[in-house]
Image 1 (cartoon, rainbow, N blue to C red):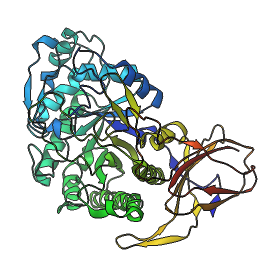
Image 2 (image 1 turned 180 degrees about the horizontal axis):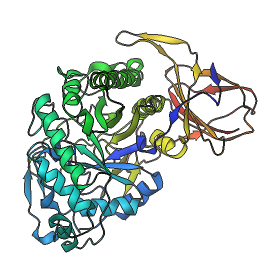
Image 3 (image 1 turned 120 degrees about the horizontal axis):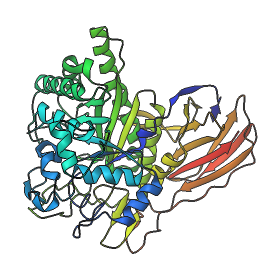
Length: 489
């Protein structure tokens, strides 16, 4: 049973919680958003991303950024160096760089989240990029931008201070105290150039790290006063046997929630220690299902095929659950990025002439289109099953939003039951739906069903039957399904 009182709310929905990510790896840039050969934006991908309504895109990495010199990717294309990219052992032509990305963001209608090199890069170089992007004119780096043909400043507001610097795989890996001090120095230099910035410190790469949470604490002890948020990363199924157990895998989002709560607790601990009035928010700027295509060796090729995960229905259900978890923690998670956008562990997949929607596209698209306004604080009761590492897992997982202006409500419902439908009785307090605006469900007999370039419509939403609007409504949820129901109050 689900009880809804429109006056009980968690927080407003920050649209940036439905962001995405484009890294210079594999075919994410060249062959994804940019033609591999020919030097122009892919119009088909641009149109689909614009239609999708992605709110913010993180760029250019990821592991790539820790060895990236942003100066290699600006200026006349013919003068840009071709370099050996060391994170993914690939050849980077630098034909797509900062200005191309920022122009693409404007064309798509999304906001940039620029990542900074904290591996081989310096705090001075980070501040220089802010000056290049944001100062109108009359300084070394702003005049260089104008020389490169961009007269007006881009006005980039949000930056990530490095990527996964706790990982030994990362170029320039360092200890927490080293990173925290470097982040504090960079933040101060960047804010000297432009005070109107939001800066995300690099948090733990994931709960599997030996330094998990301790890294976050030490980092924040050094830079709490000059940053706005700390990052979280998680890939469901990576380096784990969980993918062998469907029921266990469909509960992955509950572990994501625990991670959010643990990192938030560390932030609040440091806040208390420092007696600070500032409350940090969380940036979950890498998350997705990822466990099949894990090889990261580009064999010194240009735009090699790397991490081209083919997503099935089960993966889509896990993504739907994760979106529910992000909504339920909207009071702390104010930005998140589905990693990535095109070809590399992505909802969109291309060849030279076509682009298709993978199964995970649909829950993501529903959140972008319908999760608006405030997150409802829902009272949910559901039968449950046991998972050793989690505890009791409800079969029915629900998140919901309400738009203050219109009263329109959206419910996002995961049915983890693999065998049978589940009824969801919805009871309304202080508000009765006038009509059902729409209801769709993603389901099927085969959890392993996928969309391909030649068969792009194997896993697609269908209409969900709904009861008449009333103060009590009972929905029948198909087994192994994720649904969105939109109602007008």
